[in-house]
Structure formats: structure tokens, C-alpha cells
Amino acid sequence: MRKQVIYFFQSSVRYRYMDLLQLKYFREVARTQQLSKTAQKLHIAQPSLSQTLKRLETELGCSLFDRQGKRICLNSAGTIFLKYVEQVFTALDNARLELDELESRENQTVSLYVGSASMLLPALVRRIQETDPDIRLQITQQAPAPEDPPPALSLTSVHTRLPDSSSRIFLLREPIKVVLPSNHRLAGRPVLTLDEICGESFSELIPGTNLTSIVRHYCERYRFSPNVTTVVDTPAVMRDLLPLGPGIAFIPEYTWHDFFTPSMCLKTISGMSMERFLMLSWDPERFQTSAVRTCRDVIVRYFKEYSLQFQESGEV
Image 1: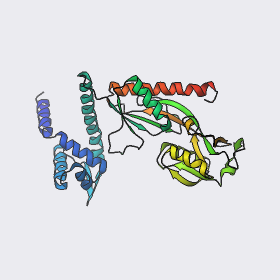
Image 2 (image 1 turned 180 degrees about the vertical axis):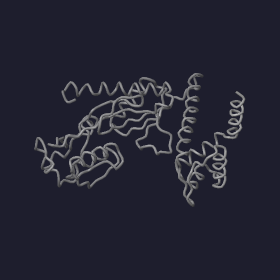
Image 3 (image 1 turned 60 degrees about the horizontal axis):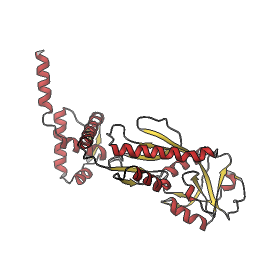
């Protein structure tokens, strides 16, 4: 018993100087693995940052980084420590959110990343506002950087259906087809082949978007290399440009329904089955306020209703 008392006393002394500022500095350096960049971001001098990390390593009794000249790299001990540091900050964030909700001071702002189905965004926002007018949405279509706080909810798509879990839920299965101007030489064909579209000019969204990544996945699978001559940043720009030239594009059939105009037609590519799966995801370790839960439930209900029109027509 005496040895146990001494052990715990020594442990408390060993860690008594560790504070949240040290943990914050460590986490930022672990993310960037660059001392100068982190010091600039934290608005502190680089020597001060280095000294803070040294004190932390001394208190832990091990090094957290491998240093090679000016380079710094998280080592195996640092990787383990970072895992628990992230849990500390997640727990603190959750405590703050839950206490705010308990005291009826809940922040009604919900951050939403929309990587897919952006053309349905006005209807989704309207539905959320009708459900709870006090909810304030922060919507972005640009994927968050690794060092940025993750959004509360993310609406994205992948090429393979993932099972529902504590961090995501499936929303919609959607075919991807090719759209072309109605005056295109292939517009009269009921079904197109890869050979027929091989030499055509293609338009696509900028690299890194969900749709572009999915389309490229299928192109690699079917060994098809589209001749991309136009790259745009939004579906609206693609819609406006497509009728003006000979280009064609791969687009989702359902969620881009409002994309179509009388001057366009949608075609299936024989022997090239393409589809995407929309899902809503979140961080299961992060406390969800009632505003976030409301938005999540509204989005899920909306897509259930939205998919019914295609089920009734036999398309899903």
C-alpha cells in the first residue's frame, strides 16, 4: 500500500505543470509538423514554442518529435499522446456545448459542409428554417482543411454505399449519366457507347469535388479517358456553358434535376454503369446540440421524401 501511495504522489508531481496551453501548442505542431508555421499561426515567437514543447517532453519523460535539422516529425510516442490530447479537447468542447444547452444558452448556429447535392440546398435551407426559425446555418461548399474545426454535419457522396453507423446515414442512391446539348450529333441516339463519346470534349467540376472524384473512379474502372476541355466550379456555370458548345458532361440524374433545360438531353452509356451514394455524416465524438440534431433529422426526412418520386416512377 505504501508503494502505491508513493507512486501516485510521484505521478501527480510529474504532471502538475502540464497545462492546456502546452497541449494546444503540441496539437498545432503535430498537425503542421512545422515550428515556424505553427508559431506564426499562434502569434508567438518560435523559440518560445520550442521551449514549451521541450518542457512538455520533460514532464512526460519522452520525446514526442523526431528532429532532423529544421525538420520536425511526430514519432510513435507523439502519435499516442496526440490521440489522448484530441480526446481532451473534444471532451472540453462537448462540456461547453452541453453546459450551454443546460443553461438555455445554446448556440443555434450549425455548420454544414455541402460537398454534394448543392442544387437541393435552397429547399433544404427552407425546410430547416420552417422547422426552427432560430437556427442559423453556416454553409460551405469548400472542403474543410485538416487544421480547421470539422463541420457539425457533412453532406457528401461516394461511389460505394457505406453501411449506416454512429457517424453517418445513407440518404440516396443516384445514377450518373451523360448530358449533352439537344442539337448535338449524338442527341438522337437512345443509348450511347464509350466509342461514340471517346473523342468528345467534356466539361467537369473542379478537381477535389465529390462528383469529379467519383466520375474519375469510374473512368479508371472502365479505362476511359475523357477529353476534359472545360473545368468549372459550380453546376450553375456548367449549365450555362453546356448549350454554347459541343461539350458533354457526366452528371447525377436526380439531384441535378433542376440542371436540365429544354436545350439538353440525358443519355445512358452502354457498358458503363455509374452511380453515387449520398450520405450525411458527423463526428460521433462531438456533442450534438439540439440545433444540430434538428438539422440532421430534417435533412434525413427531406431525402426520404425526395427519393419517393423516383421510387414511384420505378427509377430507384
